[in-house]
Length: 249
Image (cartoon, rainbow, N blue to C red; front, side, top):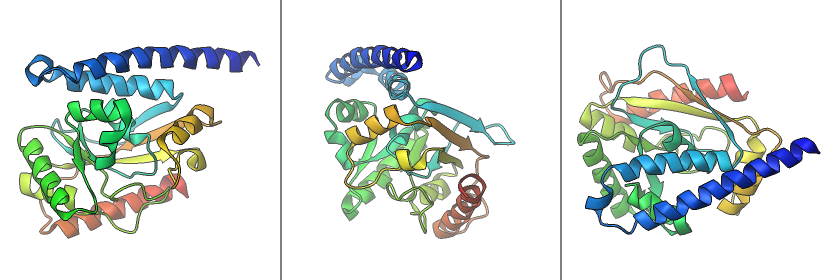
C-alpha cells in the first residue's frame, strides 16, 4: 500500500511538471521562428523525457554497437507502440517522420510541428513524395531523421517487409542507417491495437506491472555496397528478424 501511495504521489508530481512544461512550449510555439531558433527542438526533446517519466515508463538504452555511433545518421526502428513517438526523440537527436494525424493531437501536435517533425499522409502518394523530399533536404542539411520502415504500427512482431524510403534516402545522400530495435517486456500492454486511443495507451503505460522499455542500438550500416533501395531494405529487415528471435522468441 505504501509503495502504491509513493508511486501515485510521484506520478502526480511528474504530471504537474509536464503540464507546466507543456504550457510553456505551447506558448513558445506561437512565436515567430526567429525568436525560437533551434533551441525549441532541444526543448521538445527535453519535453519528451518529461513525458516518458510522467507515464511511469522505465526507458533503457542498450548500446549493442561495437563501433562509435556516427554523428550523422538516419535512424530506423520497429513500431509496435505509440511510446516510441516520444521515446526516440528523448534518446536521440532526431527529426522524426510522423503520420499527418499527429498534427491534431491537441498540444502534442502543435509542439511536434514547431519542433520540425515531418508529417506524411501514408495513403496519399503526393504527400509521401513531398515527405521524401523534405527528409532528403533535412539529411543534406546535416539533420538526423527517424523513420519507421514498417509504415506504421504493425504489431508486436516485425512486419513482413520494410518500406524503402529510409534506404532510398541513405543511398542518395551517403548517410548511414542507424538501426534501433524496440522491445517492450509487457508486450500486451504496450502494443497499440485499433481502436485504442492515445489516452488509452497512456493509462495502460501508467498502470502496467512491467514498465521496462528496452531500446537496443546497433552499429550503423553504410549504404555502400547496396545497388538498390530494395536490396538495402531487405538486408536490414533480415537483421530485425534476427533480433526479434533473440529478444521476443
